[in-house]
Length: 316
Image 1 (cartoon, rainbow, N blue to C red):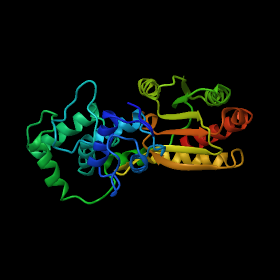
Image 2 (spheres, helix red, strand yellow):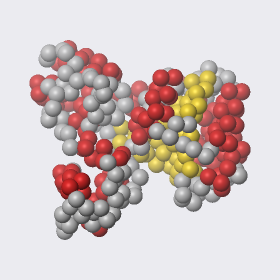
Image 3 (tube, rainbow, N blue to C red):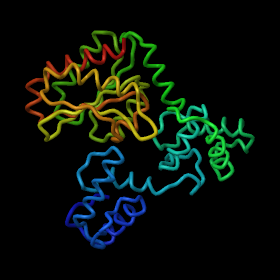
């Protein structure tokens, strides 16, 4: 569902209701069922809080994240199914499991096989029914036992940080390179440099971030690098981060890319976000958002070399 300023009707009323339930409507209120200035401000505040592009427009991604925000742990049974359950309740379960030492993977709010196995392992250790279903008895055990732990980053973050410290030559590493249109002149030399160094490559240029992520995951990539054009006159490198989890590998690679690109792209920033491609990929991932296509195509060779050097340094 996509809604924007000026729209009105039942869909906008639902949007306002969900924003209110999430605690983002302004104190002064909004014009009911109208995408008014107050609604724009609420959408922008929600997007900023959830690590989404702050546009004030409720695109499909914002709507889906709003829907997920409506779930609190204990509201429903959580279990492995297809398609995977998604929501803030899943993310809270993952956070508690991770703090208790049960690795459910990155905290992404997606109930996948790792989350199911970690939950079953916890249930066995906690003496509750071990069936991989998070029901009220499991929620109570998670909350009770988590009160006895500290406030550390949890095993998922520790595991990724340890993997980063181990390092491994680029030769033989599985690397996924994706581009969202207009940057084949950049992705080609980048991929060639990676192949020359011995990396195993998969290239994907599907316009759907979920499809790109699925290709990278199926390939078993150890790192994902995405390239996209923007209308902004500056570049941005983003990695996966939410309040309960930050990808150490993604953050490290993002900062290396920023460092190598400083002399090529005048204005470049680094930030942690919850963009679909960063959330859906199961490995450290970065998305390099460059300026207008033609401007950056003129610098393609230099950008490709800088990104290659950053990936090589990250892998070492």
